[in-house]
Length: 402
Ligand SMILES: Cc1cc2nc3c(=O)[nH]c(=O)nc-3n(C[C@H](O)[C@H](O)[C@H](O)COP(=O)(O)O)c2cc1C
Image 1: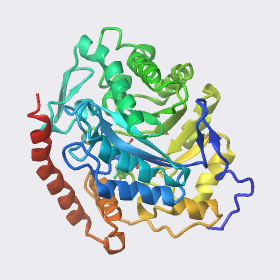
Image 2 (image 1 turned 120 degrees about the vertical axis):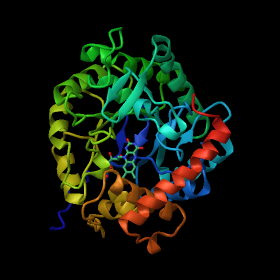
Image 3 (image 1 turned 90 degrees about the horizontal axis):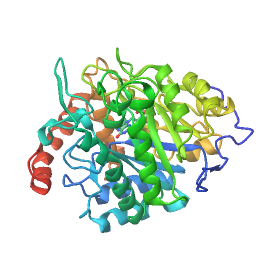
């Protein structure tokens, strides 16, 4: 690949968000569930070290994946939990180390809905569903109506703990993504039906979070451009969602796609050459004044520069590339392609690639990445065993799943 110069400094330009906060460049570490919580929802030293490395490496913003506000509905038992008795000391250690070098650090506030981790949850989404091996209960109207206040409370805890913004998770098949998707949302009240009704709870959540954090604090959202599931959110729906979000106080809309629904394609397991969602971004950009981030499948600096040059996105989201090389932004900002070799796995099982990358995150947090070279199956086994062990810790802190 020729070392194309970023002559216009497209990667290096600051991005001023609508709330006035500034991202120092256009490279964002997209949310990853790092599985580095202590099993009881608290931040750990290894996690602080991981985000410190990304901040040292030049990333403008790192987003911590799957930070929960309701311990009954986690994605995994390594998630952080922002609740009343959250360990603020551990969170502040994390946010202060993660925000060196003018880096932003935001939690991705979520609720796993129908995809909550069954050993420690009774999964519950917008509607009761039984599709093949997938089962979840449906939320009552009052449970839905309580969501905005609960997201808002978590956002306020995040702000108090030193996070510099928040992202609302409405992608990848988790709760708010399920509300947007006609496959998961079969409600016949004000929260179901056409796109505007399915999006109502998302808009209510954004408004409540804004009230809680004030006008100068960044709020982002991650949404799907399509669920890549038959009967799920289509690109047309997703474009309509962008139009609806345009009238909110959001600062950043991140475009992704796919789902962790059993048997579905997820973006983090995808091996096809990317980037995946640039064409969608080209359609979405004219529909909103809110800055867009496009995430998924970026492997080279040229792809990032070319995407920004098209003016269809304001920033580039990177996940796996930054697990392979946490200081990649430094290279890319210096017009250097960096030393990035993606591993190739033969016939990986569903979720296997994501598990391998998760275990590499642990190695980075423990300063052991130079020795990290497991077989895929070994990484998967370690990932699953660790979560099995953590479920007991989760139950002893938060009680049995109700
Ligand atoms: C280990 C791992 C964990 C992930 N966890 C999350 C998550 O918690 N929230 C989220 O929105 N996306 C999550 N993702 C998806 C990424 O943010 C990103 O959308 C996806 O990996 C595609 O980008 P990439 O090609 O740069 O990796 C995860 C990806 C990986 C590899």
